[in-house]
Length: 114
Image 1 (cartoon, rainbow, N blue to C red):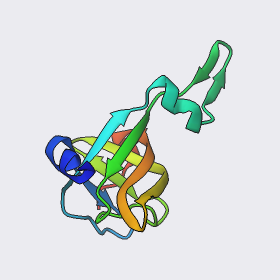
Image 2 (image 1 turned 60 degrees about the horizontal axis):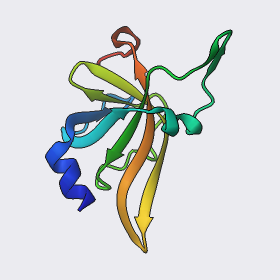
Image 3 (image 1 turned 60 degrees about the vertical axis):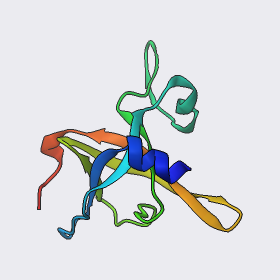
Image 4 (image 1 turned 45 degrees about the vertical axis):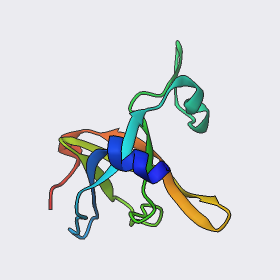
């Protein structure tokens, strides 16, 4: 059920590693984190409160396992780039149902195209 929703409503993304490897495009859900989801983040403390700008929730298929990518790997979706802050496999019994991650938006000039 989760996989069919990802494939139907997901956005086209690709994985890029520092050694120049790029995955084929695949579908994943990427959405801005809402207030209640931000409990996973430390945030940036400012004089007027805590800021969490630029963080996104990722839900992806288990076949594209982003949990063990090398440091400085990133995801690309159209002209948007994301760093993976944390990623985990979500299981039901012994079946890996999907991959859950927190992404941080990168500026385009911070990403070197290989």
